[in-house]
Length: 249
Length: 244
Image 1: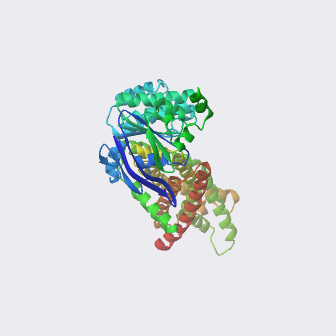
Image 2: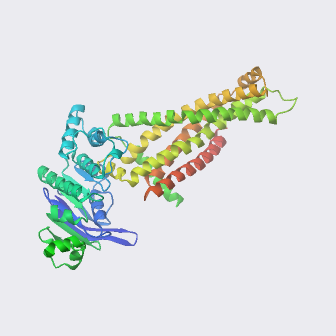
Image 3: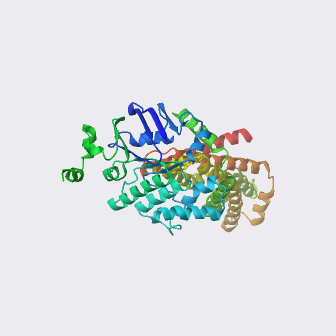
């Protein structure tokens, strides 16, 4: 379980996070949603240590991440997988090398064992046989799937996904969402997804955190999100005509 | 502002020399960088060196028209100016443009496309993994390139001197072999080592702390070249002042 307690973060005079607390449970896909500038990505970056919170704490299964030194943090980071908005694949490496990279760095597995693991995760994300392709030869959806494959190659306990659907068509977007949910349940991973995609919210939002003006404004599930009387949340949810039309029907 | 960047640069250097996660991977990266920096720059360094040597000989001959000065001295001047100044400094300035911009744009692009964040999330020391192989590749290969540049410059000087009729082959050889002080070669190697360190680390610093997008990557690349060139010239003066 990941627990964030009273996180504050400012950039200069701009207070981005204002006392956010939440818990993210294993085997559950948690979504952090909110409009642009609400602090979603900043919260995630504070959780993984890419940013340092001004105050508050982040703990992984009771281990206080914020007070750790770099060496201790590295041991936690080996348990974290992350899918970045643009997939962040290494341009100079093909798909196989991208996925194998953390295995090369941190395990003493033989070449055959590593290749087995690469092929397994590639099959898991429906990209079997694409080992030798370079990132420049992949579509947006394929890049995201390779990103997921790389993130789960080390069998992480925690998975973070930053806008996994951005730039994808609705069909690819649903495939990525389903993949994230399946992997979360299959391996009992604590998954945190930052998104503003309502398809994802309705599809995989078992646990949703709605941020507004740097604060936790609402917390619940996709079953409750359309029936809340929270004004700001309703404005966010029903911002698209599609959602409005579907719910009227 | 200057002290802020200098402090940040020193902290970056400190993190470069942290213990590598897996030496075998770093070793492969070092070899890859050695090939990229060394072989990749051999062509341009060869062309520049031959012409620098040739121009030095011809211009020295033009300035030394006197019956009281033996022509063989042109060979000596070409040798000393090539070894002491032209090969290490001019080659390093050219390499700052070629290698420096490449390092800054490569690392800068990795920064803006979150590839560096991905390395850090995996628990990898990103400055060490990205910069140390480039630094070692540079400090090994740039002095070797300078040695090749010295040889080619002197060859270029010999050919241009003889072909233009400024002096005979034997006069050039006589000048080349008279009064050689081996210490100047040591100074050249010290310069090459320091310039290599400057080119790789200053460029890496500019790339590593790039913020923004494609435009900023271009700006970092330009800054890397400009700052490296200025730092090379300042340290060139300081080395000359201290060692000669």
